[in-house]
Length: 416
Image 1 (cartoon, rainbow, N blue to C red):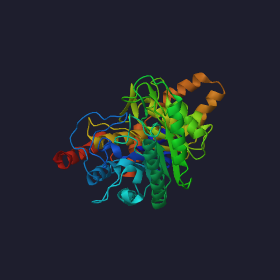
Image 2 (cartoon, rainbow, N blue to C red; image 1 turned 135 degrees about the vertical axis):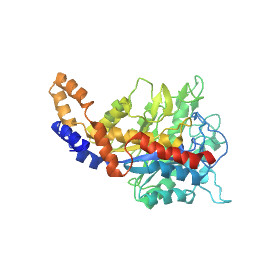
Image 3 (cartoon, rainbow, N blue to C red; image 1 turned 90 degrees about the vertical axis):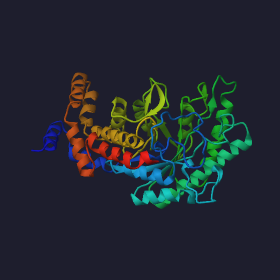
C-alpha cells in the first residue's frame, strides 16, 4: 500500500474522500499576479514606485521587459499545481514602437500580449487600473482629488480599464475581475474626511457606468486602512469600500487580508459578507504587522481563510487572487511558494469533515469539536498533497522544484 493509499484510508475513517478533494481542487482557479516579477514597476514609466506602496529588497534578476516578465511567469507556472488565471495591472501595457498611450487612453490592443499568454494556457485574465506611480497623482490623490482635471484623468483611466476587462473576458471566455483600488489619503489629520470620499464615490459611479456585460466584467472596490505617506486617512476605508459594493449592483467587495488593522481577520469577514453578497473577491497576502505584502505561507490565517470559503460552500462564489511582492528573495520562488501555499490551504480545507464539525457545534458538543479539530491537524496531509502534485505533474517537495528555480537563476536571471 502506498503512502497515499494509507492516508486515503485514514481520512476516510474521518468521513473525508481525498480523491474527491483533489478532483475539486483541480477545478478552482486562482489568479496569479504579474507584478511580483518586477517589483510593481510595469512598462509605462521609468520612475520609482509611488502612491502609498513600496517594495523592499534588491535581489538580482528582476524582469525588465515584457519578454522577461512573461518568461519568468511561465517558469513559475510550470512548478505550480492547479488551475490558474493571470492578473495584470494597467501599467503593464505592452506598447509597440511609437505606440505609447497614457493611462486615460489605454486600449485593448495594448494588452494583446497578455491575451496571447492567457490563450496559450487556456485560462482567463483579471485586471487592475493603476492609480499610482504616475505624474497625474496630484498631492497623493487620484479619484478623490479636488482638482477636476486630475479627477477626470483618472476617471477616464478607470473607464478605459472597464473596456479592456470586457475585451479580456470576450477573448478568453472567462469573467474578468476588475479591481478598483487607490492609495488616496493624507499623511496627517485631515480637515475634511467626507469631501474626498464623496468625490471618490461619484468617480467610481462614473467608472461603473461605462457599458459592460455584468456576466463578463466583475468590478470590485478594495479598501485599505493606511499606506506609506497616507498614515492618518484613506478615502477608501473598509466602511467606504464595503458600502460602495453593497449599494451598487454588480460591484463586488474585494478584501485584501493585509488591508485591515492587525487584530482583524479576513477569515471571519468572509462568512459575514457571504450572508449578503452573491459573489466576493479576495486578494491573498501575508501582512507582517501591517500591509507588508509578504509571500503567502501555509500559516494559520491562510488556512482559516480557505476553510471559510470551503465551509460556506463558496468556492464558486469567491474570486481568489494572490497579491504580494518581495524583492528580497528570488522572485520566481516567491510566486511558486505563495501559489502552492494557497493551494495547500484549499486542499486542507477540502480534506476537513466540515459537515460533521458543524453538527458538533450545532449540538453544543464543544468538547468533541475541539478534540476533532485538533486531531485533524496531525493527519497525513502531506501525503495527500504529494498525490495532488503528482497528478498535476509538478514536484511535491520544495527541494525538488527549488533546484529548477536555482538553475534558472544561474542560466537566466543572473545574466540580466
